[in-house]
Amino acid sequence: MTSAVEAVHALERAGLTVATAESLTGGLVCGALTDVPGSSAVVRGSVVSYATDVKAQVLGVDRELLAAGGAVQAEVARQMAMGVCRVLGADLAVATTGVAGPDAQDGQSVGTVFIAVVRPGAEVAEVRQLALSGDRAAIRAATVQAALQLVVAAVGHAEDSGGGGG
Image 1: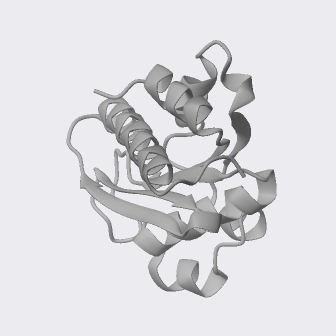
Image 2: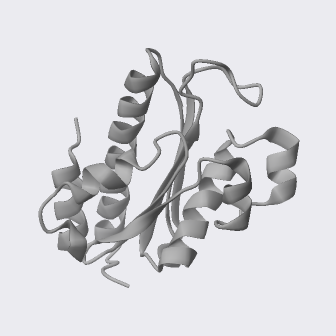
């Protein structure tokens, strides 16, 4: 299980900053990161875009995409991550969108989650779809863990390709 401490230390070693764009996690990913002493050196901030219109207005997610398929889509997660990089000036971003329950949303069942990690300058982008089970708290906690894992993996890709701070 990847911890926030591992993510912060990986970011520090790579000389990268991170931002989060969160929907179903409501700031839990950024909260986990900022619980780590010294995280202010790498965490730029977070946009909690819980409402669909905030995804478009603040993060620049395509309104037609949102209207056509709702907020729970892989491309929405990718655009959220790209948007928060732009808004907060981060080297890398992670975004979460999905359905924590208790009811389905946008035609997606409870436990459907998309997490995106992007590093615009290095063209590192990954979107992962998860099918989680459990109650609302369990789905949100598992999403935070998966987001931290993707951050660590993206930092590893950046280090492997020789990309340091930006």
